[in-house]
Image (cartoon, rainbow, N blue to C red):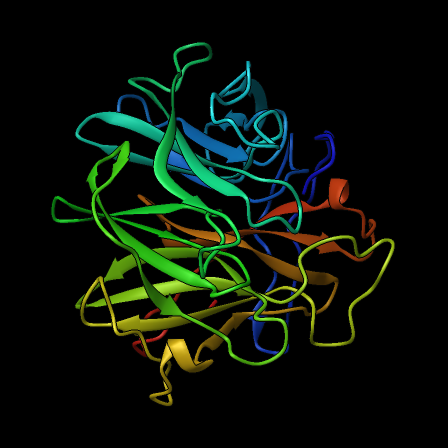
Length: 320
């Protein structure tokens, strides 16, 4: 859940603590939640999408900014007939065959009555998006998963949708097209302990491996109720030699049995990083991006900031 977007800036942090590099620079509109990052092929403009304002989005000449607000992807709300169709979450934007697809979640906080919708545009310019409504991935109390936090992965023309939050955690479903699910889903990550606090998958390929990134822990509401130490959001990853799994961590533990290496967690003035994705920057290489709380600024959801770090895969595992 997100509160209204605020304009702010965050300068480059200096130093390394607990083995984690601090976030890269951000200027302009840096307050946001659940980022999705993509670069337009025609002119190199960066676009960043986020929860709130019926999927808000901004543009910049570089990942550092300055980020400038554009507007809403689905300004009239989604056509999906579910509570929350006017308050859209967790975008994921991908380029497929020359068309940009923006996936979004329709739900309400803590509910399993959810669906993943999609809009498309040839350019990502304001007022060029067409909302296609539901992808066919939906959930209710009869399903083992929650159909939010969609992430589309293109495996050489085979489209796979990764999604899920709490309940049975992360699932994957083949897509028959960018706008429609093809066949049944299957579980690819699960934390059996506690409240099953795993969500927000992002799948990417690097070298001969496929890396499944996800968020684990309590995401929100830190200003009103602080989690116990270590129970706040953090970013984890497993890998596989196949886009469909099975995914394991560096110790060999299956991602469906609670496996997952921590990629980024709270450190210094960075608290609760998550809602992540991976973007391959033409100058920087693979970049992990996410939202986080700067403890020197404030803990409210509306104060969360855009963070990013270059990823080092030299060990075979993602390190920031």
